[in-house]
Length: 117
Image (cartoon, rainbow, N blue to C red; front, side):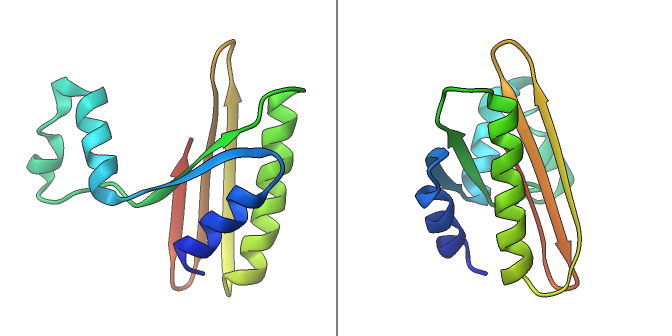
């Protein structure tokens, strides 16, 4: 499955406010802006360790944790249909008073995908 197709599917979901592709270089720049004291770490590693990902912003209202869980379940079902031989999918949802985070990893024989939002 290509990123553009996945991005379009996410953006068309009624529970999604926005879906944005974040390339490896942009992920590296975000890391350096957020963690200025560690900004040389990728250079020390010898290469950019950050994967491309898709950032998803959910529409507000209702119970956000339940919305995130339902969205993750729907999207993982679609990924399982489109990505051959998914061997494992792992989702971690966390929430505090002002922030909700979803970490998703999908693994197959030919491709590993991961995202945090």
